[in-house]
Image 1 (cartoon, rainbow, N blue to C red):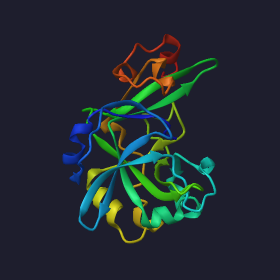
Image 2: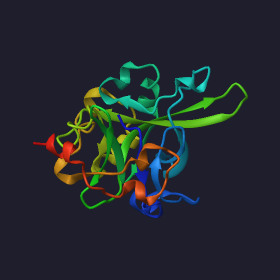
Image 3: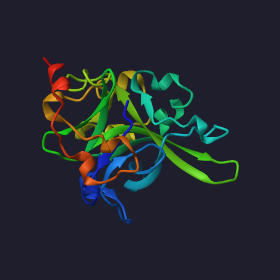
Image 4: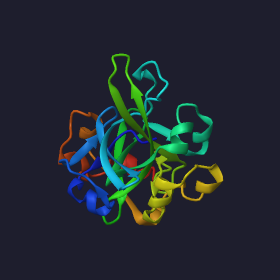
Length: 228
């Protein structure tokens, strides 16, 4: 699962993803479901950056209650909520870190995960376009997930699919998604290229969207003991 992430290098996105964008973006340290997020899509004229609601609402849904923030990569073509989007509407969701929580007997310790060099990366995503009963058009997206790598598996049993830059073009532009075509890229990301560290409970509330959410804190002694 991926239920919270950050994007603090917004000013570098257009160049990094070779995408056209004319708006303004601010650093985000605690992005939460239902909030607007930047998404990269491929068009006939090239890649574009646009804003979407995080939490995909299928085009056929009667209301927004069917919204889902994550889609299991292994079964995405079997689920009515995601099948058409996976075949026709794939995207990149930029980030430079994400959070997961390790549960203990009476607490939840949040951890930050990202690249060792703290660089930008992209989640594999899908998107859809929904029209509300009032006639309002909403574009929304979901992040694909996969099994955890060695860095995550003692914290959570799922992790977001992080695409290697070499696979951005294929993910965005392939004419049709077949499970065997993309099985080799929808995999746990190489843990040797990533790092993790504990962060404060400040990140637990989506009301907190400040740099302190992503600052490393000392790990509790009890939590340290579980690693050995």
